[in-house]
Structure formats: structure tokens, C-alpha cells
Amino acid sequence: MIPRYSRPEMVKIWEPENKFRIWFEIEAHACDAQAELGVIPKAAAEAVWARGKWDIERIDAIERETHHDVIAFLTNLAEHVGPEARFVHQGMTSSDVLDTCLSVQLTQATDILLADIDRLLAALERRAREHKYTLCMGRSHGIHAEPVTFGLKLAGYYAEWARNRGRLLNARDEIATCAISGAVGTFANIDPRVEAHVASRLGLRPEPVSTQVIPRDRHAAYFATLGVIASGIERLATEIRHLQRTEVREAEEYFAPGQKGSSAMPHKRNPVLTENLTGLARIVRAAVVPALENVALWHERDISHSSVERMIAPDSTITLDFALARLTQVVDRLVVYPDAMEKNLNHLKGLVNSQRVLLALTQAGLSREDSYQAVQRNAMQVWEAGKDFQTLLKEDKEIAAHLSAAAIDAMFDMAYHTKHVDTIFERVFAAG
Image (tube, rainbow, N blue to C red; front, top):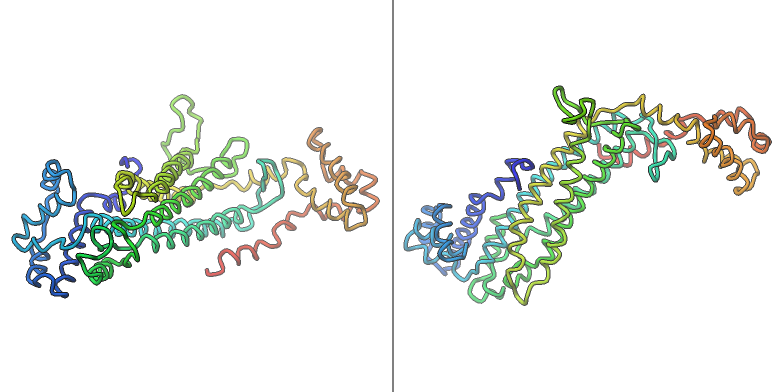
């Protein structure tokens, strides 16, 4: 991933140094297990740990000749270990190293992503509680519907991100498997206890059936989860973008001193961060289909998945890490305009209470169809002539025959729409 959308901690997971360190640990732990089983001398296992080193430039040079990355690594490792290196990689195949390493890297990456989500959840909860009773317009189809509170909006996003965290935990669990089973997964040349030992040392579980590779349905599920999370980023980013539109302006991204919005128009304050997040979400989701297509490999293994994963694993996790951090910053510093929210609430001169009037008329004895028609004919005058809905209702003879002026006035109390906010917050934030 390009540096512009990368953060150092996540990048390090995918750098060659970390990869080769994990490769070394896989081989060294396997040697320990082999020594315990009496397959290789204990002194050989000790030598691997004591003298095991690698040089990235040297590995690259060897690979240019061998055209095989694992062999290049093992050759360079042997140059440091010495004669005892002949016991390294006994009964193993390259995928034992590559797939187990990828599992470690993905679990490392996931731990960072989980921490990212925790910070986002904290920001969402703080802002939701801050605006628990801040009334704003709820919209369906982009059109004014009924009042909600801005805190409820954010509580809904909090609940979604709590679900996303659970999904990511499940994905981490599914991807955290180890394969040290040999050329076609039969353990013909290596004892299954070696796999169990390596898995325990690396915080993984043995893969029940690994053929020559760990089955790619696990990876498909993992990247699909990242795709769902990316869609969650876009959903919240899109809401903020809509709220920042000039005609709405109920909330906006923080605009820093000295920041410029346009090279041509000095007045511009654009939602650049959330627009950027929308684009980054597309990049993460773009990995889902290739990951799904990786599931169907030939027989016990082919390498059609390899080039895909070399790209999507680092790019998806690095991009998602950056996006989560940016989204947290946006939420944390989001500028909210309650006065604009109130102005928009009143924009349709009381129409947002139409359902309440409809229900009151049905309870007063008018049929639902007649009630709907009575409310709608007055509502259309508000849309078309800009009249006051509350006044029109009082002047309507059919409505006045069923509802008193005082009863109609009572239906325009905004507190009616917030009476269950506490109940919803309790559902969402019960643990806190």
C-alpha cells in the first residue's frame, strides 16, 4: 500500500523482516519438536536458535537464481547455522512455512484492527452520550420523516461496530490455524506432534486437514469480514457527507486553521476525509472476490492463490487500519450544529408529526383511510403553499370534529419522539 494510506505498526507486519522472523520461528520450533521426538539431535535444534540469522539482500540474491523464496531463505539460514542446518525443514513443504506464516501475520494484523475498532467504539459512545437528546431530523429516501436524536444516530453506528468487532474476532479465530503436515498433508514424513508444538508456540491451532495448504475458505471468510467492516466505514462516512451538505449542514468534519478546501473557491469546506474513506472502503472490498475465487484450488494445491494473497493481505489490512484510524478522528472531532438541526426540524412547518395526527384520528373513531386522506390533504398544502400544518389541522372541519385544538397542539410536542431514548441507550450501552 502507498505510504499516504499506511500506518507504521501495520506496515511492519508485512515487511520482509517480520516475515522472515516468523519463517525462522516456524523452522526453529519444528526443530525443537523433532529433537524431542528423537528425529534430529537436540544439539542441532539448539544450533538453529543460537546461530540462526538471515540477510534479506542475500535471500533476494539467492531467489533470483533459484526462483523459490523458501529455498532461498533456507539456503541463507544454512549459511549462518552451519552443518546442523541439514536437519532444518525435515519432512516439511514450503506451504507449511508460507501458510503458517500468513496465519501469524493475519492474527497480528487483526489484533491491530481490533484495537482500532475499540478506539472507534469509544469515540462513538462519547459523542452519542453527548448528543443523546439533541433532536434532529430523521430521513427516509432522503426526505424528512420523523424526529430522532443525533445521539440515537450515533448509538446505531455504535451497535453496528460492536457487531463488526464480534465478526472480526470470529474471523481471527478461523484464520489462526497452523499446517506442518508435509507435501500433501498426510504427515508421511513428519509427526503430527511437530505441528501441534509449532501451533502452540505461535498461538495457533493445528489445521484438521490441510492437504498441502490451509483450506482457503478460511481466508475467504476473513477477507469477506474485512469487506463488511469496510462497508460499515462507508455507511458512517456517507451519513456525515450528507449532513455536511450546504443545504443540511447539521454536522461537518473539523476544518483546521489554515486548511484549504478548494484551489479555486476560498469559501469551500469539503468533506474530504469521509469522501476519502468512501474510496478506501472500495479498496478493501475489492479483495473479497479474489479471496472467494482462491477457494477452488486444483487437487491438493496449486499456486493460483499465492499472487493474490501477496497483494490483498497487506493492502487490505493496511488500508483498513488507516481507514479506521481516520474514521475515529472524524467522529472524535466532528462539529455538530444543534441549531441547524432544529431549523431543519421546523422546515416543513410541523409535517413531521403527521403520523401522530393520523393515529389520533383513528383512535377518535375515524376510519384509517379517511384519517389518512384528511391528514394528507392538509399536508399537501404545506408542501405546495408553505402553510403551517398545525393551523391547517385546526381549520379542517372533519379533523376538528374529532380532535380539539388543545389535542392537536399536544401532538406537536417534540418530547413525544424522545420518550424511549433511554430504553434504546440501555440496550446499546448496557455493559457500560
